[in-house]
Length: 155
Image: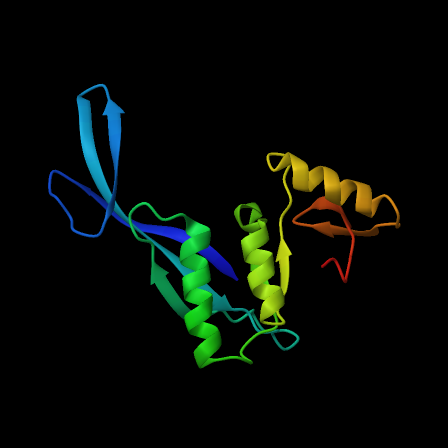
């Protein structure tokens, strides 16, 4: 599982190599410095009756001016050089549903499972048209009724 996190934020001091944002409040504007990183966790299957295991494999700090996907690709390059067979599938949120991410994983013979949301309208429309050609697999997740499709060989 690949995801970005903000570990901490500070105000009133300048922090080298941190990103910053101007915060507007009723007490006036202030500059906040924060540190973000992308983490890669291994989520191996748990034996029956045991809780799932989550292992932090590695993390990469996000540089100022860099987006989360760029950071993730730098992290994946390093991790795949060290542990090329540690995983076959990368889980990620809708932010990662972009061509550079998918192309990188295809090049390294890895699979991706990402969330599609209507905010990414073009990709959502394309996926909807593709999935209209096959019946969904029905299921439940966190108490909600869901539909899943599996499409292979999309490159």
